Amino acid sequence: MTEAPIPLPERSPLLIVVSGPSGVGKDAALKRMAEMNYPFHFLVTNTTRPKRAEEIDHKDYHFVTKEQFDQMERSGEFLERAVVYGYDYGNSRSEVREALVRGQDVIMRIDVQGAATLKRVAPDAIFIFLMPPSMQALELRLRRRRTEPEDYLKLRLHAARLEMNEFEKFDYVIVNEDDALDETAVLIHSIIQAEKCRAKPRRVSL
Image 1 (cartoon, rainbow, N blue to C red):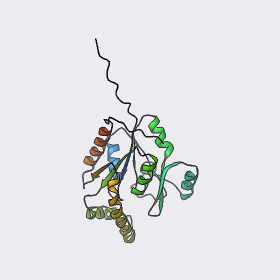
Image 2 (cartoon, rainbow, N blue to C red):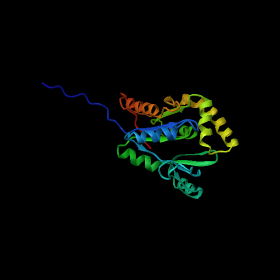
Image 3 (cartoon, rainbow, N blue to C red):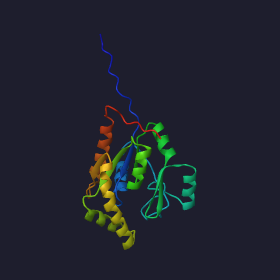
Image 4 (cartoon, helix red, strand yellow):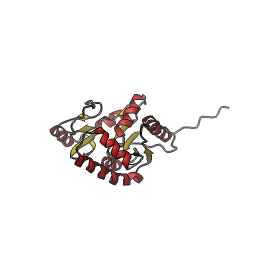
């Protein structure tokens, strides 16, 4: 007589939040994951920040006006929103919901302030903190951008030192080494694969 198979727990799609200080490489890590064809829905953030020369609208960010952003906020569009260095950032609740309903894992990058907000809204999301190998390495990365004046750069570095103290509030910490984006992308993917093997699966509801 053949024994009935043991029922396995149903696996719901996951919400993965990648955070860390400005300049740590959040955008670059997720962009590299997309290039490596990992099967996730990559959430694109709305922002009022001016577009940098190398950025592509609706791919790197949805670049919107202050008026457009405020209208989206009034209509309850944002899962979370934050003001970072004077600019508004917000992530679409409906876009996350639609991807989860389709059965897709959703991965998003967000600043530390926004991650704290999202943890209250979606506590079953996976929170990953990217950390630079050192503050000196982080400063060098920010200076290489050449997108901000010196005073603004010093403000970012001061904020980064404060944000580094928040890592213990996250589920996982990855040191994003210089010239090691592939390794960081693989580590993020490995965390997600391990989470899918949990005896008690995470269930995200928004």
